[in-house]
Length: 109
Length: 280
Image (cartoon, rainbow over all chains, first blue to last red; front, top):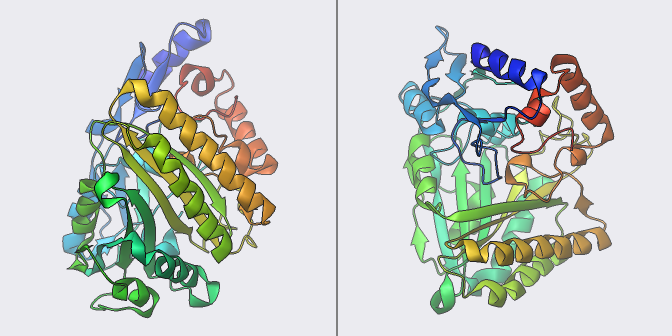
């Protein structure tokens, strides 16, 4: 990702009109251009979907392209959850950078 | 920076604190609109800070289901303590009759998020738009009436999904260490979302126009009643809305300063044009 962004930034800084890109995790946003670059580059995060629970089970490291159902599928058998989305199919990255985390409410946001 | 969306860079990993949980109560109950008054009273009671229960969640939605059924009421509920079937915070919603559908059961989280996904429209055109207010019964009733009056404008639209959705902004959010700009004394807040979908591009202007006008009319009501809150939830915001500005001047200035420091050339301002940008 950093190589891609560095390359895109170089092109952008040489001429701001030469490159446009978008960053996609779950692709759920209906806002134009939020989940893909029309005529530009889409950085599709969906292959960055690792889910690693720490040895003491207090923290889970989740790749930004992970879909929330994958997170719950991994955590449910461990009787753990995280403050995430309430609808399957949503991506981790766009959901969390948008400012919300759902459940349980004590930990919302 | 939470709430800053795609203005700063690309996050590749999130480290999330885990929460211990087993199977818990969740599901959806759907009722006819004849239960309206009881539903509205129950939601106001749920929103009353003196009844606050951090384990209880309700999303109350009003759904236009076509000319035959008309409007349906849906309460999507969870209670995040194990082995409790009728928690006091949800008992009124659970007891309202008649019920057309009731999927309440004990289950794992994956079960409930999968169920929610089944209710989402697929491959349709869609939009969200949202506004926030401090709840009073009069305002809550008036908002439903305003929404209900817009149905004839859209009822002929192909593959229509037309939903008025209310959920609590948890009391832990205001004052939290984030960019959303809600002060600690914000009180009880309801997030109102219009969630609309349709089938044809030729209906884009109609659907967007009706929803935009409706939110403007609702905000007239909440402002007149002194219960309007400027906050807009970015992921439910329409393109015409300004969620970053509405975090407030201090929060916005902080976000702009971070952007200038880490992205001085503005790659993520002009090179990533989708979504909501600090530079606009």
